[in-house]
Image (cartoon, rainbow, N blue to C red; front, side, top):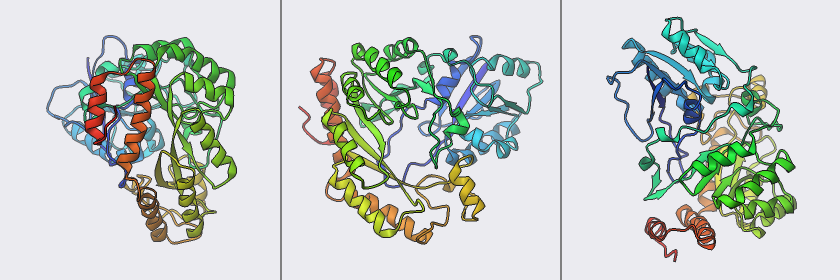
Length: 420
């Protein structure tokens, strides 16, 4: 049977340099399919959907809330043509009830070990309206190597430079952060994959640059250190979400090829200042993820925070506003307080204010978001800061002889700088 996996298009943050990473969720899902399934993948961000091309079943994979309405439109078109449509992915789980109105079937949970039944039901003409496996998570050992062969690699370039490939070493998260839905989606228990399987998958990726998309690597010190030790011989260069603030861990991370981390900067404390310095002392860059609009934020405190970011010399920064996604504590609180002002999922892009802030108007918070982007990048544009981060990885690659002269030339041309 022929299965078409579609990843609906979505808009980037308004002030962010636009580039596209190869999606991870759809190709992890594809790895769970039986061998007799002929799968193809379409990333609508970069290619068109040809609705008349023959297909037996369409699977729409949605990661973000801002993909939901487009995903529903795609499904409606196929269903009018008589093609069955099943939905899955993070945003499907967050918007399951609404998605049911546009789907022949909705899959909730992790797919490993479950797709044989789903596809058997489909072949028998008995596809269920909903498959709810949220509380029936598969053994983590069942997670296979993602089907990167389905990706059209040539599409995922930024000015001729191949973007990072995504990989994950664990699921679940023992932290339950206020704006985050991971505890609902993946459970509150940290579930690390066997390290040998993770290393095998990383080694199979022909790209030297990776993005470890785990929610946080800083959840089990021994596992984290063991993972980094095994990564050292691969000589990959990678970015990730936070690494544990521990000198031994940071040293191993650097030796394993840590390029930069996404680190939340939530205040102007000495702890944050020192945390960023420790990353830098180990040669690890930092992209600050800055969330604006928390209840303790005022106009003055947000402006002080932006000044602080410049003082601590973040390599780059990404600014968003608090967005109350379903199944988060933020959504629960703001809904109870009657402070949500938009339920249009196209507005849930993390750069539009969809709630009433506590200490200012929604319009003022929106203005401060633009102020944050403009102020942080005023003296050094985002592309220049990105080029400096690119130089860091090229230097690391040259140091262990994995750097290729052609890529250096492409990087120089892409960023308009001499990277020699």
